[in-house]
Image 1 (cartoon, one colour):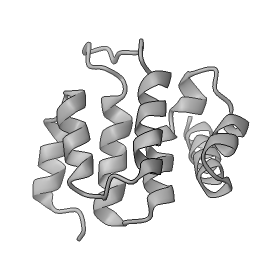
Image 2: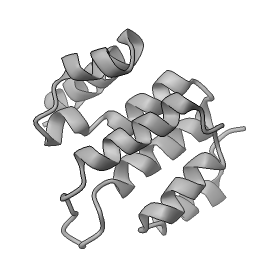
Image 3: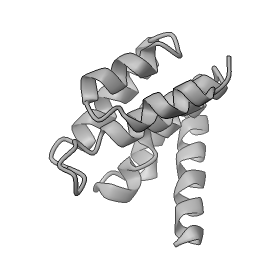
Amino acid sequence: MGLSQVDIEKVKHLHDEKLATEYLLSHIKPTEILKEALSYATQAHINQFRKSGEPYIVHPILVASIVAAITNDEAMVVAALLHDVVEDTEIKTDEILDIFSKDVAHLVEGLTKIDTIRD
C-alpha cells in the first residue's frame, strides 16, 4: 500500500461526499466500526459546510482516506473520520470513548491537541 502521487492528486479533486466515501472504502475494508464512525461523523457535521459550499464531512473522509492509504490501522482511520467532531460540534471526547474505544478517543484527543498547539 502507501500513498502515491496519483492518490494525492485524486484527493485534491474529490469534493463530493459519495465519491470521497467510495475512495475511502477502496483503501480499507468497510467494517461495522468504520461504517458506524462514518455515519456518526456525517451526522455530527450534517449542517456544516466549507466556504466553498462543499459539505464539511468531505474533509474528514479524505483525511481518513489518506490515513487508510498509509496504514490499515482501523482505530487510526476511525480517529481521522472523527478528528473534527470534538472541535467543531458539541460532542466531547468522552462520548467518542463511550461509543468507539479508548484507542480511538485517545487518538482523537491527541489530534485535537495538535490543532490547539498549531493554532
